[in-house]
Amino acid sequence: MSFVVKCLDCGHTTPYYPASVNCPRCNSQWRDVEYDYEAIAKTMPAQIAGRPFDMWRYRELLPVRSPNPVLSLGEGGTPLIQAVNLGMMLGCPNIYIKDERQGPTGSFKDRQAAVTIAALKEAGITEMVAASTGNVAISYSAYAARASIKLWAFVTSLVPAVKMREIALYGSQVVKVTGSYDQAKQVAAEFARQRNLYQDMGARTLTSVEAMKTIGYEIAEQLTALIGLNNNHAGKPRPIWRMPDWYIQSVSGGMGPLGVAKSFHEMKQMGLIDKLPAIAVIQAEGCAPMVQAWSLGKDKAEPVTSPRTHIETLATGDPGRTYTLLYKQVKESGGTFESVSDEEAFRAMHVLAKMEGISSEPAAAVGFAGLFKLVRAGVIKSTDVVVVNCTGHTMPAEPFVLGDNWARNVVLPSQARKDETPQDGLLSALSNIAPDRFPRVAIVDDSPETRRLIRRILQSQGNFTIYEASGGKEGLKIINQERPDLVILDLMMPEMDGFSVLDALKAKPETASIPVIVATAKELTAEEKGRLKGQIQTLMQKGDFLSDEFLEEVRTLLG
Ligand SMILES: *Cc1c(COP(=O)(O)O)cnc(C)c1O
Ligand SMILES: [Zn+2]
Image 1 (tube, rainbow, N blue to C red):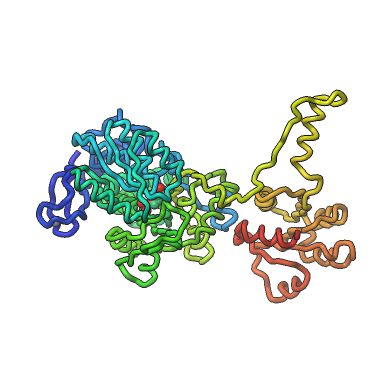
Image 2: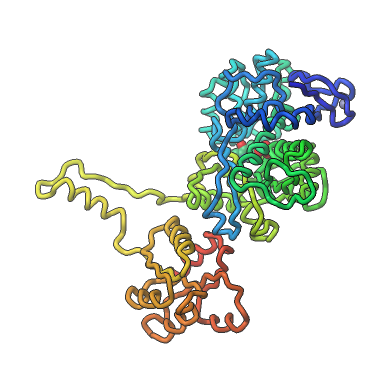
């Protein structure tokens, strides 16, 4: 495999040695790996067809001379999952999740660790230093263990203790630094300098950026298999892979999207794709130097010296030159930088788990909160194909997300009373789990899909007794019979529409005061709005309602 390292500042090229981190001509540490793209373009598509679906599939485009299968933990090759329920909720059906939780240590850092450790092993390096907000050190520790490399892991004291213990479990030396992540990086760098040890240098670590490219290649292959090519490449040569319209990722230092963006350019250059996706980079509001700079139109970020976010994984206050490089990529791609509050991220984490069965760590949820924001703002269109990187697995953030009362207790009597069979004891214990009466909600909608979605949203939030009707007549009958506490009503239904249902409800004293939420896909005329005025509590646009807002309404109305 042939590749060279090219200096970003003076253009000088050298062979690649992991331990030499400066350009020999100008001393810059900002460099890039270049491959023989022309040759690779000719051979790669055919070659990869016969390889397993993991990140080494793209080995011609990674700076490791001879990948050693013995070091592998099965990194890469994570699934691309369609988010059907989220798509319905957002009115944006083509949302896909690149599930990086399924990496060997549960985050996308496994890619960078796998390639970096492989290169270090190849170069005979036996000891290294890394500063981390948690996940980098976990991944490096696992791969370093396999490669018998000693790792010194510098973490801030805010990193959750479970993460620190995992690092220690792999045999790495954890060094807790009481200070910011940027300070931990400085301490680690000084330690490495004094001992002359190899150190991870974030986006200046060539292997790390190169490793992240594999996310882009996998998305291209997976999306093509899932939805095929689009047909508008008139006159141009037909690409072999499909790109999404958007790639969304939560960031700290920004290495992930930098590597992924490089893969997009490589694929374009090799004629494998015909367009570049827009890149959306999402930060936590309490530590969003990139978003601040972007909003001012600047390509240099002012460091945030004391990050204010609970999401420690994303606490890089000073992104340095990585931001400048990323700024260029995002701008050229037609993408954007956006920030979300911790609260929005925790809410998104909950929605993602409840709606899609995906339990992500808060840092990953930041990307999804960003998705919600961009869809709501109309930046992402309903027809866009969107891939969100779900960067990492759940870490104990439950206290923030779930609050108290997230479980119910069943205490079984240790010995059944004489007059009681064991079943009785069990039944009486179980009867404590579910109170007799739950709030009762009638859903009147002719679309089974919509009824299912609303039912799912309600049930994910708590216990409800739900009645469903597929039309106005049936709905009216059920409402009269059951007298629910709330009605969720569609307007456009054949036979008897929502307007007539409302008229009938309001005409009867027994049903006149039942609160009604109208959920409609229809753009209402002024006259129709007039008809609803005073008759209903809330008007929700279908597909436009996010479960949280909807639920807040439900909760308020049910008192
Ligand atoms: C590292 C990390 C990020 C941020 O990644 P960068 O691209 O390096 O900024 C986001 N989420 C998780 C779970 C991470 O581990
Ligand atoms: Zn140089």
